[in-house]
Length: 261
Image 1 (tube, one colour):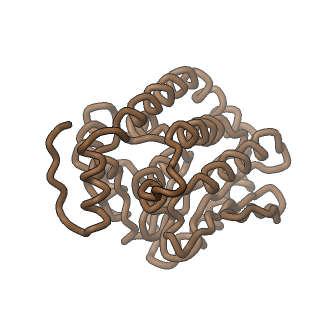
Image 2 (cartoon, helix red, strand yellow; image 1 turned 120 degrees about the vertical axis):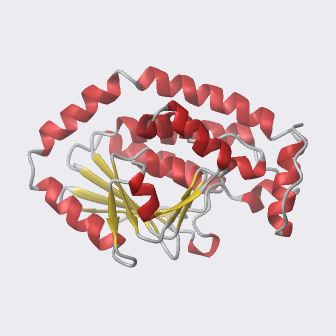
């Protein structure tokens, strides 16, 4: 086991499990977690002994997304440009890992948490998990490669609809539109992902990893371009009135009044 403040990275044979471990905050991602996710994934980039990576969340959610409380912290202001640098590292590394990646989703996978799920090769979600690309609710654009990963899954027209509506899906609903590959019974997501991982390492997985590398190599420049554009757009959106209203309304648990500014 490798020591991180917000994560657990465990290796057993050819399978590694990365667990986001801020259960008290529904594994929402603050600066520390973003940095540690980048570092832990990069450590697997050169690890040829691991062929499958399972990513999951501790507690009652996969990840509620970016840490909105951190965004509101006036004493330690949230550095959006630093965050975007970490997210670029996370998304790029996740896409180019020499392992087959499995997202094991229970509870919420929202916003940035959902971008990360979509960056995985195989998505297993519990029946009543809640998946949403809901950046729009706080006046932001998807980040963490969300535009790219969502478009790769469902195509551009559908991706726009999902990003603009911020619609929430259960695991069952998400599978129907191709956002999720496998649905597990509630409470069995982790066990289902573990048995899927076992099945993979009993397959000719070197060939599967080689196919992944071929398919992803041709798209890498596009992902990098998307990440650059997301960083510029997100930095701009953070300064808008709509974003300030969105996070204020979120905290006050009321409907936001957006003005398009």
